[in-house]
Amino acid sequence: ESSLITAIALWRDQIIVASDDNLIRAYTREGRFCRVLKGHDSGVWALALSGDTLISASADATARAWDLNTGTCLHVFHKHTSTVRCVAVTDSLVVTGSRDGSLHVWRIPKAGEHLNESTSTASGDDLYHKYCLAGHSDSVRSLSAVGTVAASGSYDRTVRVWDLTSGECRALLEGHTDKVYQAIINPARCNEIYSSSMDHSVRIWDATTGSCMHVLTEHRSIVPMLTIVGGRAQLVSGDAEGVLCVWDAASGTLVRKYDEHGGSAITALQSDD
Image 1: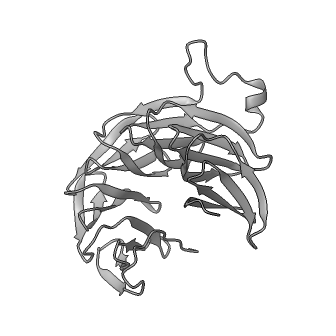
Image 2: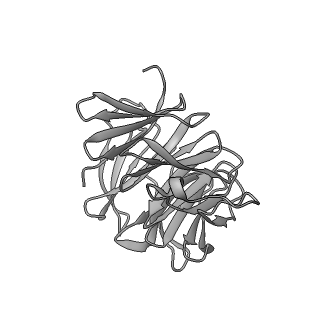
């Protein structure tokens, strides 16, 4: 493949791969090609899974819901005006974030609904659409969702925490001095938010009070990658110079530091935890 791989998701015994050639491909764990999902008119930038339903986000300003059992597109989500850069799913909802600065909350289509349900009204309103979450003044780069809570990280240097039942912003987390690349919720403690930024720092926030509890400053370059491991007890961050740091997620203490990538940027993090 000459195309750039932009996102990967694991479904049953298959690996779902998105790329900048507008396509989504499915392979077995052994690498055998299974299926291609066609529909987007530009590169696909993010994937999220809800059971057998795949949500894809694209530079064509849309997101799509796919039935992975059949390869059928269940619905096309039209509301954004620029690249849909990130997507997150929780319960029966999907949240999309875009370079237009907005987020939208949608109901996830079920297999078969596209056959017997009109999904738009005469005025063009999408029956799956629930809310527009407005507040960011620049591109939304990252999304995380747990239960009825979502967190978004933006190039406007802020993190926002949202109530998905009402569409209201619960907290505005300010402190980063450059673009926010990642914002994630601790599934074990939903009031705990983690963010990483172009300002080289990682921050740990209390979403209840809106305060920053810890600023982690071991990195010396952009920190584009962030994830939680170890039963939600450890935070792992990766930077543009190939440095990987493991932190205690509660105290912000540095547990371990790895510098084994020869200066090459860390562009993906995955854990089997």
